[in-house]
Image 1 (cartoon, rainbow, N blue to C red):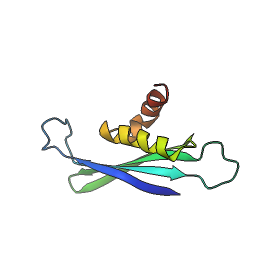
Image 2: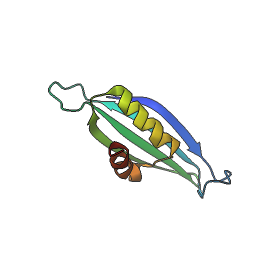
Image 3: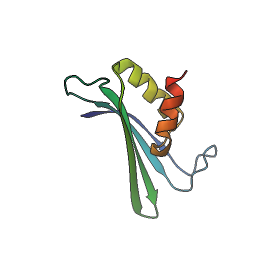
Image 4: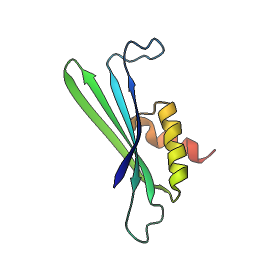
Length: 99
């Protein structure tokens, strides 16, 4: 199961961003409801890219990161603030968890 946490939209009109096409990033908190699961909360990032009328969607899930819902929400906030995409989630989580 997953719940929507937050999302951002990045487009080529933003002078600070180097994107050629509009991108929507969505951040989800995943929850494992199985019993005896070591860490039940995880994170999913969904990236939707809009290129000349074509929509490309990419996503990546990292399950079983923490038992703390609050800790996951703090991690998602960091990921969102840094505009982390699916391709960078593993490195970002590894960096966050070693702080």
